[in-house]
Image 1 (cartoon, rainbow, N blue to C red):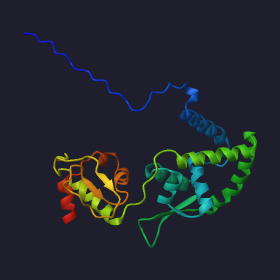
Image 2: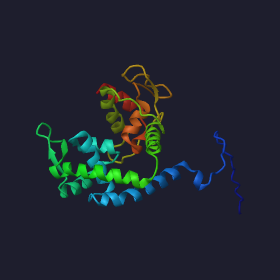
Image 3: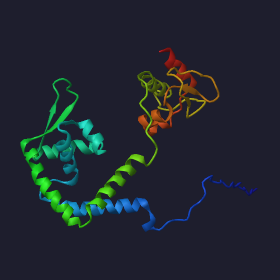
Length: 248
């Protein structure tokens, strides 16, 4: 006997009011994307006179401005990841513009510095920049204002970064995560809450056993999940895991 199965449908209403779909020219993201591409196309022919690419040029600018830098410092200043920066540094080194050396006091730290050839390239660059700004054919005050507005946008747009976590808290997080995953299967166990409620009031986890798991530590919540990445964000932190970490 055949049965008709009726599926119930529910309408989910978003608390955010819908907005009219803007055209391509009204998208801020496209305006920034198009401006970036346009600037690069204009700038590349001038960089070819120096024999470097645009990302390589940015590395040299940092070294001309600040002197020798660690690879980590360069990655932070240039907003690049190590996977992109490391091979690029190798190519710049191959051009004889920089050196890479491990520090005697800390072999884990690689220091990047300019060679005499890299230093001498600065003079040619200063002349090239003068030619480039003339080529742009725009008032210098407008270009300066645009630069300042873009810096403000990068600094202000998006969620604010959380302050650094206390050392005790940072030591506790890996133990919580490790205890929440089965070592053999990688599956998470039972849990009471996937996102712990956070109260900034000291650095000792308390309140274990409450329906919504409470971990008391300054700036713990978003800072932990942002620091540990997307996989950790989805992990449940169980009551048992907290108790085990507190006893350790």
